[in-house]
Image 1 (tube, rainbow over the protein chains, first blue to last red):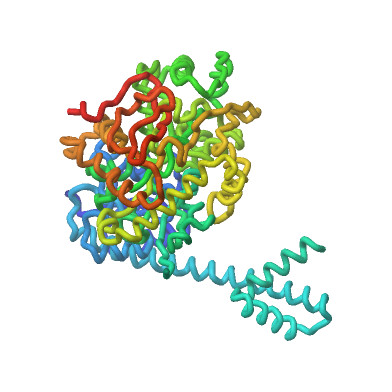
Image 2: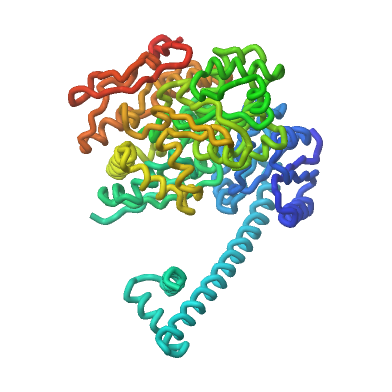
Length: 194
Length: 391
């Protein structure tokens, strides 16, 4: 068996893929290939004869990898999903980090572990960045809606900005809803009436 | 009673309706439970979330728990199918290339005759036709294999490839697949996108096929019998509501929401009403029992249905699990179904196995409370599957 592992990463986002490739190359002796296109995925993976395939848990094309686990699948040696056989702690960490790994039959745990440790750390980082970005975007959206609702109230009731915000907040508290939701309802209603 | 929240995974499909409706129409609330419904990106993800405890219940392809019990696929946690969520509801379709060749040959797209459809397909392509399906363990695969084996397609053969339904239109355009078998709304979406045409409803191949099941971990079923009962009753009542024609438009609107299927309610209504648009020029076909949530004791998980699935899986996969099919068939929990639905007043079959494919017309059978009517469940080739006759 050659010392070098062959790893395939299925990832369409180029920057993300590069980050994961770099991290793997730094910590494990391996050849890494990235597949970014879902079309013909099983065959493309098979041409690299990988030891390990890594994919984001949320990637819908994951179902195409399921074929790799079958004896009749495109690989010479069938693969198993990493979580099914591996030590509990590492498997759980992989799931939480959002990486699923398919590992070829018979690969020793000692060779899998450094790859998984690196992949888990990297996927966790990417996932965290992604959720922070989504959170920021959502907060900005809400800010915009609240500003519009304040503007509508100021105009309709002839009150100043602080009073408009206080009214929104009071309504939200009375109804047990979020300020952003009340603002959203007001903007929608005003759109319908306007 | 304090409301208990149960995390539930589903794939955004029309046949996730009993779970969505149970939550939205208050059937869960009546049982003192609430569903945290999690839309999954893939079937592997649904299976993993259930197997590894991220959710306690799931909308699952009926062959998945059977395959897991046979030792197929990546994960082996024991799973119980406690109810059937829906019978039928798949469509077979072809991409534009095949559609044009079929049309040139005068094929009428009757959306009814499986033998004629196979003959027409075999006449327009001399190499195996590649079908895209959502998952390797699915009723889609088993219906395709059964249909192919008994028709003119057996000569050229078919190939089956997994393609996530949202990517099916791309896969057709790229020539990765020639045809497809998917659950609604994906067939109708493909037609509306001009990606192809529908040739058969799934129930033209098997008249009453268990399509999706309500799945839980077997150890959860054992440690949480009370919650399980509440879950099953809420979902069963939702299925009964869905079975009433007057519920249809409300159901289409609920399912169409962005959190659930996020497609226009009109597209969802095609499956619920059985009025399908089969070509992008707007040809309409009507199918009886296109999808059933309640009629014909649809929720009842017959061991014989699971045994048919296990038998089919063992035809195409070589695994030690195939030595005896009784174990894999027992993942369909007719015992739990009877025990927990007793309180609903549901009338359920007295037997746990039946001959599959033997019913040609709606038929009354002995039940726990008198008599219930089963719907036609014939296979297209007229064969009957006798569960006690399997070696």
